[in-house]
Structures are given as structure tokens and as C-alpha cells.
Length: 233
Image 1 (cartoon, rainbow, N blue to C red):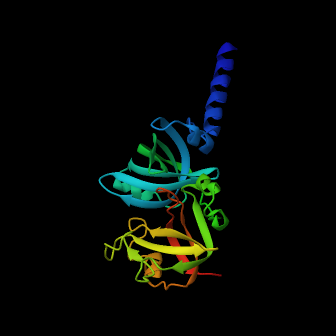
Image 2: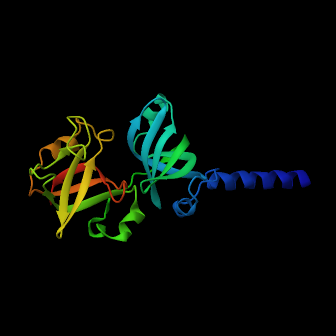
Image 3: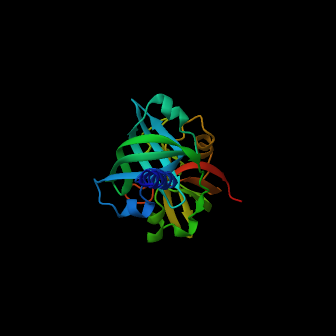
């Protein structure tokens, strides 16, 4: 009888662990509350892959309760190919901060069963407010923005932030809303010169009204990495 009871209890424990994903994954709230440089484990979903180099992957990931930027995680090339948008992953690494960007570094990635793709959150009204930072790294959208000059010569975009780059480098462009101007970026590792958004930004003209989607990266303030640009609806 005792043996049967022990087996039943062990089975219940296994089922409980399975229900919880069998991991010590944190909620996004717990992750944000964790001290910098401490080990963190999160269960989340790939939304976009920024780069892979020498068995290290940089990824935008998001769950229903928040988003993560995973920088240079250990990842084989074959596993990187499996990290399509929506793929569920278990990430263990260290919480870090770089120029305001909260990220996970020195991480490992385990591919899990499950899928989730986030819908962009419209954060247009949050631009210039403290509320915006709470959505760092999320998939977001901006509506009805006006293209402004990127430099004193009236260019609609620049290669690199100071115009020192060339085709294939990051694109920087300015947009405004209600009299305030903001700088957005097409990160070339995320969306290179062969992508629609890269070409769309190159074709912008000052005064164009546009809608955008992207990821709310942070560098000394909001620095959205734009993945789609269309004429304003």
C-alpha cells in the first residue's frame, strides 16, 4: 500500500512539473525585478532573429506578459535555423544592461514545444512618456508619423547615425508627431538591404506620412528597430 501511495505521489509530482513546463522559468515581472548580473531563466517565444555569428545568436523574444532581448546566446547554426518566429524557447543566462537596454547575455537556449506570435502593440500615444519604457523590446507599432529631415541638408535618411556609412549599413531617419521629433533605425543585421523595409526607408521623402512596426529597442532612450514601413492608413 505504501509503495502504491509513493508511486501515486511521484506521478503527481511529475504531472505538476509537466504542467509548469518542468523548469524554474520566471514571469516577466520576476525577470524585471531581478538584480542585474544575476542568473535568470525565462520561457518565451522567438519573434525575430537579429544575427548569428560563431555559434552565438541574438534574438527578439516575447511572451504574453513581456518581451526580452537575448544577446549572443550560445546556439549552433543548425539550432539557429530552427528558431523561426513563434518558436518556444527556454533561455538561461544573466540579466544585463547596456545604455538603458535590459537584455539577457551569456545565455543558453533550449527549444521547446509550443508557439506564440505577438501582435504589435500601438505605442504611438506613449512616445515621449515614461510609460513607453515598460514595453521595452516588445513588438510595437507607430501610426500617422511624418518624415522629417535627417540632417541639415534635408535628407530623408542617413547611413549610420552620422551619415558616415554606405549601402548595407544601418539606416537612421526622423519622424514627428504633434510637434515632437523622434529618431528610428533600420538595424541592418535584423533587416538588411534586401528587405522591403530597408528599401522602403531609402525611398522615403520628407513630409511623407507613414505607419511603422518594429521592436522597441532602447539605447539612451527609445531607439525602435523598424521592420515594416507603409503609407499611413
